[in-house]
Length: 237
Image 1 (tube, one colour):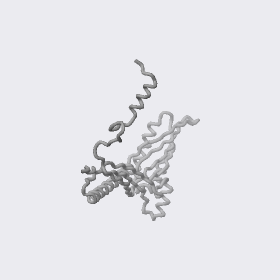
Image 2 (spheres, helix red, strand yellow):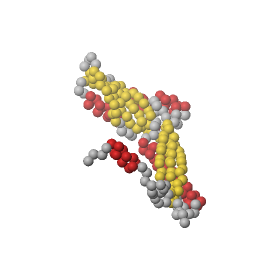
Image 3 (cartoon, rainbow, N blue to C red):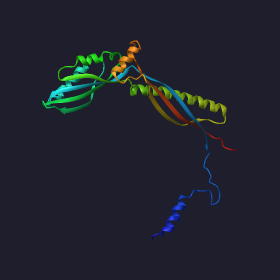
Image 4 (cartoon, rainbow, N blue to C red):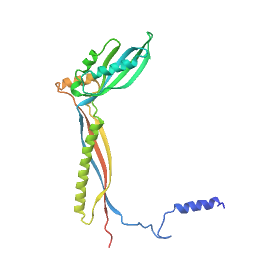
């Protein structure tokens, strides 16, 4: 049996209506409501690093089909620079020329200790030979993800300690309550500082201005927490 449209609309409105204790009485709450305290906590610290992400650009001219051997030779050359790191090819592009050679633009990347940066350009120049030109393309002192996570763990521990202090204070102020953590919502941010070098030339100029003592990168790490503390209100006698 099909119901008319008017009847269907009436039934929908009836289902959407709030449930009441009776037809005329107010809505009643089931159970005892929690007392809640909401806090906004913020802590900060520095994320420091003594290494940099370095990109070396290589221009290769190789015979057709010989790129695989040229790439392996490039990686072996970078490994032989005497830096305790692992070089990885992260980008390459090919174009042909009129002489029948393949010209490749290759970018290799590695995390390099700060102490090895000062003579890296000279080593790249020494590794340049006919058919292969190397140069330092970029130096980025942004801290690694692991370094950021380590500071985040420290900041989170500080938040937990402050939450514990707040709970102790609340329980002392309200002896008939027993406050607990109901919710902690974290928001973190990392703000690079101006000391992060973006190229080898900038790094060398800044290093010389500092008296050759080196230039470490750093970011300001901030962790914000929205904290809800709750305690079950005592029953009304």
